[in-house]
Each structure stands twice: as C-alpha cells, then as structure tokens.
Amino acid sequence: MASPMEKDDLVKLKSFIEFVDSNPTVLNVPQLKFVKDFIEKFGGQVPAGDFKMPDAAAGGKCPFGGDAGAKSKPAGAGVSTPDSEGVSIDSDASENDESAAESESDVELDMEGVIQPDLDPAQPMGDSAKEVTEEEMDQAGDVRGEAAKAYGEQKFEEAIGLYTKAIELNPGNALYYAKRGQAFLKLKKPNACIRDCDKALELNCDSAAAHKFRGRAHRLLGQFEEAAKDLRQACKLDFDEETDEWLREVTPNAKKIEQHRVKQERKQAERKVKDRLRAQNKARKEQEKQKASAGSTGGFPGGAAGGFPGGFPGGFPGGFPDMGGAGGMPGGMPGGPKMAEMLGLMKDPEVAAAMQDILANPANISKYVSNPKILNLMKQLFPGGDPTGAGPFGPGAAFGQEKEEKDTPSDSSEPKTKKDSADFVDDGLD
Image 1 (spheres, one colour):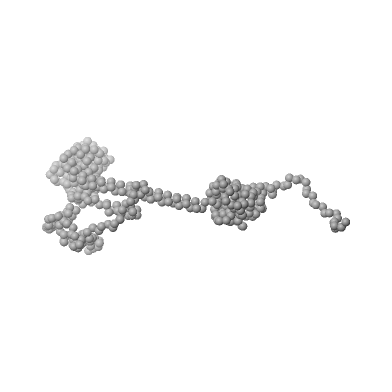
Image 2 (spheres, rainbow, N blue to C red):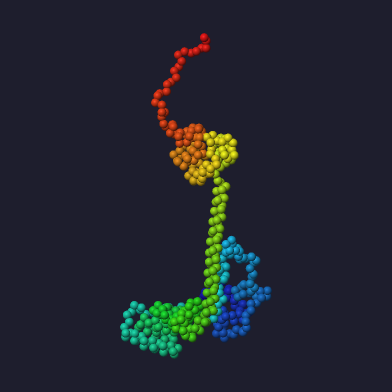
C-alpha cells in the first residue's frame, strides 16, 4: 500500500520525531498542543517544563533539520539608504523585496482552540422562492420549539434536523438559520455554521445571533480578524456577556494581524515609491545622455574639420566670415545671428536628411530646388550662388533664379547679327 505522504514529508516527519525524542518538552509549546493531545489520547505523557532550544554548538538542531542557532545577517545586508528626496531605497535589488516580505509574512499568533475545518456537503437551505402560508408558519414555529428543546437537552443532531424541517416550512425566517448554525457550532462544524449565518444575514442584516455565531465559527477556524468584526457587530446590536467574552478572546490576535497587514501595506507603498523613483532617475539619466549627445553633435550633420561639414569636393576655401576664418567663401557665407538661425533649421529632420544627401553627392542639390525649406537654407548658406560648380545651374549661379533665367527667352527681339567677315585682309604693307 502506498504511503499517503510524500517522501520529503516523511523525511521531515522523521526529523521532527527525532527532535521530540531528544527534547520532549517541545510539545509544551502552544503551537504543538495538538501533537501533545494526540500522544496523551493513547496513554502517553509529556514531561512538564518549558522548552529551550538546545545550543547549536552542542549539536542542537531544529525539528526540520536546520541549525538551532540563527545565522546572523552579513554586515550591510538589507541596509537602507535615503535617496535625494529623502525616501529610503534598499541597497538590495527590487526583486529581493518580495523575499523580504515573505520572511515577515508569518505572525506569531496564539492558535489554541483552533480546529480543523469541517468538509461536509452543504446543508439544505430551503426554497427561497416559496410562498409560505400562515398554516406553514405556525407549523414551523411548533417545530422550532421542538428543536430548541432538543438543543437544551444537548441533542444537537436532532436539533439540526428539526431546524432544517422548520426552514423547509418557512425558509424566510432568519432566526431558524442562526439557531441551526449554533447547533452546528456545538458539533465543531464551523463551516456549516458560517453557511447558515450567511443565509440568516442575507435575510436580516441586523441579526445579532447570526453575527455572534458566525464570529465564533471564524474564531474556531483561526480567522481572527473576521471573528472580531462579527463579534464587535453582535455586541453593538445586542450586547451579552458571552459575546463580549468571545470578542476579548480574539482581539489580541486580530490586532497583531491588523498591525502586520498595515506594516505590509506600508512596505508595499514604499516599494512602489522606490520603483517610481528608479524609473524617474533612469528617465532623467537617459534625457541627460540625449542632451549631451545632441550637444556634442551640434551644427551641421556629418561635421568634419576643414571647410563645410561632410566635405564638398575640394572643400571651401577661406573658412566662415565673422567666425575667425580669413577671406570668406565665394559668394559670402553669413555668420553671427544668421548662423544660429541656420543651425536651428538644421534640427529639422527633413532638412538634415537633405543636407546629408547633398553632402554625399553635391549633384543631388537639383532634387531640392522645389523644396522651400531646403532652397531657403541654401540661399542663406550661399547667397552668391552654388559655390561647388557641381549643381544643375553652374558655378556662381544664384539659387532660385538659375532655372528661371535659363527658361526665360532673351528680352531682345532683334536677332543677333553675325559678325561679317572682312572683305579684305590687311597684310600690314602700305
């Protein structure tokens, strides 16, 4: 027959039993009370006394194989340093934050009295659409009286059956569900109780009994926050000593859980702030990098020392006027404020691409004579015309005028007279 436990679980169980054999007082720890009860159920006896973890130096080990001595954190691990905005940013990577949160997820709670959940099928809830007659209401009231009597005699199973009969007769009565839930509590069936109380509160949200018994059921399942909430509401609706006692019983654990949750929420909020700051810092650095890159490549694209960037054949003699060069370029390259304006034009991607094309092959200038932006820039660069001699209009031709001048016929309507040949040739002799 196969074991119902996995091999790893069996190894852990064996380690635990070996530890208990060497340190039996560990069973006096509240969290292991269920093991102690199990041993005593079969006639065993656990030695009295407080448990103390054996020293690691003496070979002591935790029940699941770890050393008894806690390993100290390496210096500097998890150190937090404030950033420029005063928000603490962990020195560890952000992915380590999740593991840190998991290590703190366990809260030390008093689990005494917590039981295993019941897994029975859901109990009958009656037909909520049923139209109940007065006769059925009376019958349900009589059955409810019998159920209360059986409950008083601690015949809880019988009481549950009678309350179920009353519910089938009158499924709209919230009290029947709450009372049947109370009987389920006596049988240590908290989930069944919660189902009944949920139905009761669906029918009557101000049912103090439903809040009370559901709160107790949550407590038995170790759901302390839910238990405190229900019991607190029950005390507000209809205070009684038993409800108040149950509330005081669950309050310490509920507060611990609430404080832990608030702490985790705060850590999560801090983590989001850190992530946002990291993203902002990254974006700022990227922006500064782009600015630095733009500054280092300012001016005309493809810039190179000596003459116009990119290099027309032969370069431009003389340098730039007003910028320390001597002699100027043929046709006059403007300087000063005009140069700043032209550099602004060069930031236009279309203009920059066109200039790259022209610089790669000066003859390509003919492709852009119909583009106002390119033509305007070329006019400012070379007001005296195309200095390269490679353009479509020849050296020294003015931009925007060449084609017009070539296409426009001469204003002179008189045909040019061909120079007549001389009738005689002077031989130089008189």
